[in-house]
Length: 265
Image (cartoon, rainbow, N blue to C red):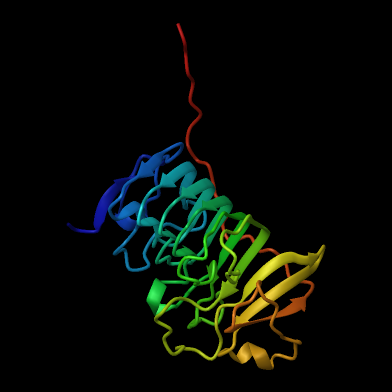
């Protein structure tokens, strides 16, 4: 299939556009479950091509449960609002974090990897991610892999992960599973001097943020005072307190749909 096709645009004219850059018209209130592979696979194989910051893929009010791989977001420019992932082995899996904005993400009983690093075993992240409202609920010890994984490689040098309003609710089992650490059994050598730092906003109190990095990262030489803080950090992560770090705005959605009317008789 040819990816470039003449597309009818709001001005009534057709222009050649890459089909991978077209956002959904609407994706709201859906539910997915399976005992096989994917709950929702968004953009596998698009090779980093997708919509822009004004017209992102938008997924609202979705429930995914009982899947092996819950949510695989591989397109750039993705807005997720009010998503629940329940009893998935991998909840957020193999993501291409590049202008991704998640709001109110609830992960329950994720047995293996609740919040995966960029591109899973490649552990590489090209762009930034914000999560405003992340609840990790009844996460079992399971594999012992951290609930939130650091991406080892930051080839652009600009990738960041910002999380605020983080809640860890009733972690299961007696063993303490780290909240943030490097990823799973495959830990590749980083392709860049720095990893992708994870900022937990207001973690130590209002305006007092946690900056978490890998023990392999040159961030450890940036002049901050890093240390271990279990169970927040695992054995391969270090944290420092930072201030004056803004929570970024990665997307600027534009609603250009014409007004609609519903008439009931």
